[in-house]
Image (cartoon, rainbow, N blue to C red):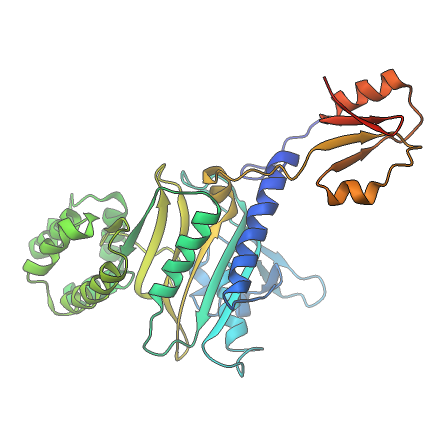
Length: 375
């Protein structure tokens, strides 16, 4: 084979990494199932009209497109499974009892990567609650996140909460043109107020206050409370403060941060959104509120790649033992006792058995029906 070069953002998961990915994925799905979340598996590819029904199709630039040779219609390769769960909730599962709790795991594909997530093929895991009426269920989701991170032995983490529709309120208050709105979004992303006064000095003051509020909620909440924002922006701020106070009251020991300048790249969140970061600033989970037609929903998802990097769980499931091809040992009992059996594929001498045991990184080998430790 002349070349084994893969496209940028794609990689092979070799045995040790793949084993850890599988274990973490299994832990997540098992925990969600025990908490009443039913697992679903939507397809990797859908027609554009169904895949992007919650968002503006033209804004989904990070999704691969292909032409279906049978129908001659354009299809999209999913870049976010949440959208598919939303489709299921108002389609095949529309008559299921509410609240409807669903979980999932599957690969997603992105046209572009970024500095936080270099991969373009990523395994996404997540859970959604559909039809929650006025109960936003933040407590339930945060408890699930705490539980899953504990099982993955990720101890140091914090939550950062944002206002996904704040930028829309600002746009409404200041009657921003499309060009100015894109400029403001870019300033938000860069946490930079430079040039905003050309649009409006009042807007510059508003953004400056929001920028100064980025950080610990308890330390920065006073900035949001004391400043008088324009009408629609003030409504967003007031609602955000009410929700955050409830969360702080329930989780007083959690590291809670706020970032009013965070732009919701998913384009479908409402109410509040959040991200969970490790001490190394790896994004572990993200989620928030959203609407599927008239239903209030909330959910969270994470990328397996980041969970694998931050998790301290071990993948060792037993000692490996090299077994000759003609061995009469009770293999079933050895497997029950935690041994991983590595079989020879031909007859070997005692010396060859020892050599192969070392070669395959076995802890023991079998000779004359005796288990011998590899030296």
